[in-house]
Length: 203
Image (tube, rainbow, N blue to C red; front, side):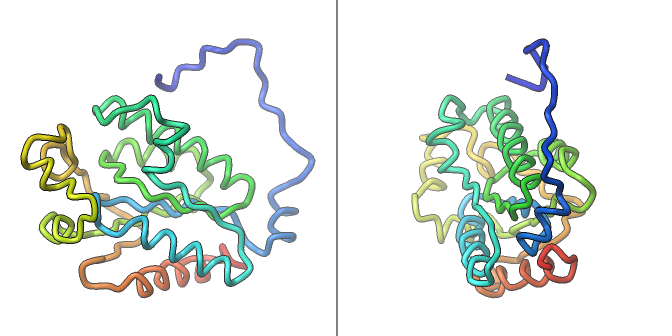
């Protein structure tokens, strides 16, 4: 695991279809909307609602969800700090490829470490990485937790649980902050749609 390139004799192959050609065809610019926040803060629900709104508007998007990715691509990873780092590194590479293909990628990952999120930002062109802090306090997250994970973590049944026994490093300068305890899902997704329109990701 890590960023070391072990393969030799490899070359990056560009294509004949440019970003501008894709933009003209798809009426959008590629971007990654990176939702970060505590478990049960509302990330996945907001991501799905944003995806629905984009689809209804004739746009092409895709949600990369934390649990879904761990069923396949990252099923070999646990929740240690090292595994969390590798989890986000792999997702960042996938998101960068989707963004280069001119999709609007919406990710829903706790992604607790600032450095990991900053590393993903570096994979993309200026402005393509949109960091969204889904800001919700631990007490509210625990009350709305559909899996009962917070109670299990407090009972010591889940080690290294973010917000209880593992740290969460909130973004310092996110593009958007969503106070999900005080904002409806529709309002949150609407706020993201407004940002995408204002910054001309929707053409």
